[in-house]
Length: 358
Image (cartoon, rainbow, N blue to C red; front, side, top):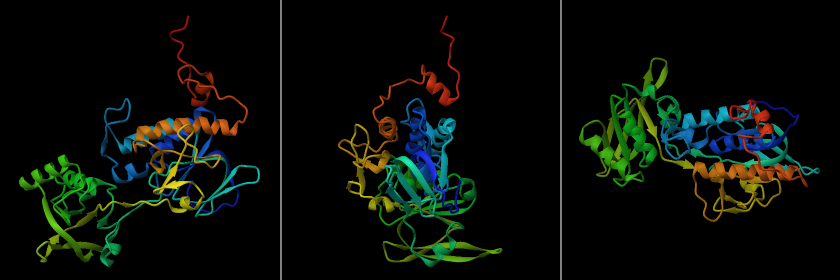
C-alpha cells in the first residue's frame, strides 16, 4: 500500500485526502452509497492529529461511546469502513490536483502515485502538520532516541528520568501521566502562565506539592549527550531559569510538546477559496466551489463552524450524498437506512434482522 512509484493510475470513485477520524468515516458514508475510495495520508498510519498526539487520551463526545481513546476510536472507524475495502496510501503527500478532459480528477502524490478519481474529498485536518522542534544540534541527533515529539509507547519511559517541555494541554497531560511512571518528571515551560485547561494546571501544581513531579520555569538552551553502549544517549537538559542561571537537569528522555506548524501544503495552490488557511465550503453539499471537490472536518470553514469530530461526521454524510449526485447526474439519490435497506445490507455484507417479521 505504501511507497514506490507506479505510473499506472489507480481508478476509483473517490480519493480522500486525510485518514483522520473524519476521513475514515467518509469512507463509510461513501461506501453506503456504493462508492469506493482510496485514502492518502502523509502520516505512516491512520488516525490523524488526535491519534498522533493523544493516542490514549479519553474522548467523551462521540455519540454512544461515553468514553474512548483516540486509538480506540480509529480502530472502530477502520472496522466500520472495512466492508468497503478502501485502499490506504500512508506516507504519501497529495501534491497535485488536475482536472482531466473527461471531467474526472488526476491526483498525484510526492512519491509519484497517480489516481484517476471521480471526486476528491479533502479531510486533511490542519493540513500537513509537523511538531515545533527544539532547534539544537544535539536534539536533532537524539530525535527518536532520547528526544521525542510524541509518545509512541509510554512503557519506554518507565523508571527513567524525564523532562517534559511545553505549557499546553499535551505537555501537562503527559507530564502528569508520566509522574507515576518515571523515576522523576520535570516540566519545563518558559512562563508560569499555561495554555492548558485550568483544572490541569491545578492538578499539576498539586502533584508538585506532593513531590511527585517538579515544575521549572525557564528556557531549554542545551542538551548534554553521551554514549550508552553503542548508541547516543541524553545525560541532561540545560535550562536557563528566570534569574538567568543555567540549571542542569538530569534526564534520560526529553519530551517536547510545543504544538504544531499547521499548513495546507500543496492544497493551498489548488485554486480553492481559502479563508485563514481553511477551505470555504457550501454547507448544503460541503463542496468547495470547484465541482467534484469537497472538504470536511477541520480543514473547512463556514459560518458557525465548530471544530468537533462529531461535526465532521455530519459533514461527511452530506458530502457523500453530494458526491453520489455529482457522479450520477440526473439520477435521484434516495435516502436509505442501514436498518432496512437491502442494498446497504449487501454493501455491508450483513444479513437483515427478520426477527420482527411474520
